[in-house]
Length: 540
Image 1 (tube, helix red, strand yellow):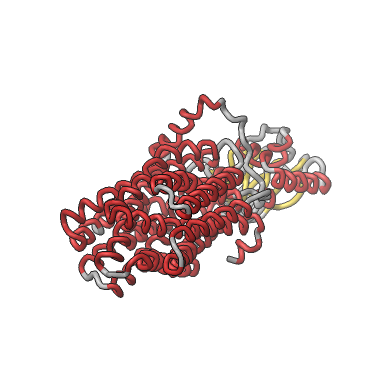
Image 2: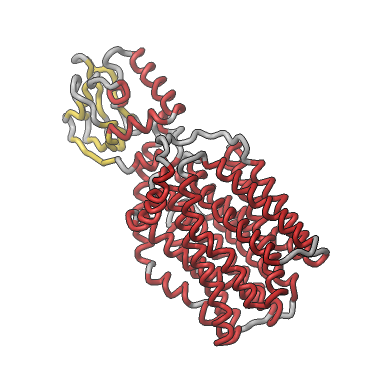
């Protein structure tokens, strides 16, 4: 929380996210009540399917545009569309208009909402500079997600009790407008962008987003596992309404209370995660979250009593919080930054399909097995499939742990510290560990420059024009002057003791430093200091 508060841009982005999620939780409860009053459980499932299915087509398209244009502006547009749709629904309900218009506007609102998260997930890494910052930012966002789900659902329950669904939709519209206002003129150092391809190439860019699931297999696996929770969420969307009305006798406010119980559990899960999550083993944490998300449904089928159901919805919420931390942290580190919105858009599209499928089939399973049998059977699907992927999730965690060790070394270099996490993560892909024996030459004065070096262990000496200039110890670096100045090596570096180095490929190092003004300024100051202290040899 402190890290978020210290960064004005990150704080505004997080508050905008919280406003959006509060609005959506209230919106979901209200539209479920309207649908149930119209057509019962089948109506809830059909409306949920109608809201989610079109987003499977729209989200990848919208996300492709989010990779073309500033992502904060795409988020503002999403918020504005949701505010207008919410206001329209309110007007239709107040004047007693046709509910078909309500559902049509709900579909438009949901499409805009489904674009918000992938775009926000793609923006968030640009506001963070270390893996730990990104992990904690996602923990904070998970806490806001959880608290917003709770507040939005309880607010909806109160408004449904005191007023009507129209009041809920009006409140959701106001919150959506607030969310967009928070992102106006957001200040951050955006990653470099190539000139956008012609619009006729948009279909190819969308296809690249889907192809990334197989090209970047680890990210594809994480998204695949998350779809199990999305499928389960589709089940839950119908179950909470049917349980509240038909099994527990809680009525319309009960829908809000059950959704609120999920939010309360998610808040608890986020608080626990904020104390214990260190950025490690996030893939396994996501798998555990999927299991906790689904198992409570089966337990509700065994004992469908109000206290038990409320407690199980809390456990469901805990699982939701744990899934989100790994899901929105790791793919951002496994996929190139310029494709992030598209990969998260594909995730959003498949999430919509999974959620729509779950909501669509649940009424049929209830008719076939009864509410208790449906809860028992559908709650076992996700845990069984997650168990099959468990070993692969552990391998992803091991790979990320090695990457974090490399980034920790890179962050010792002042010119690399200002880089946002996508840039430093991308640079870590080009790091190789090399070793030299005592007396061996690492680089020679006058040679071409092809690498930047950081000393992990041992010491070295810098020799310029046959004169010892200085010694280098663990944490020191060399090689930037020749690379960034596009010159030959200005000095010789020789190992004094057995030397272990991280070598960074020169081409991505040069392009990364040059792409970010803050990093380039640090590099310029370092080179001036070294050249001023000793020219030409004090610095390499």
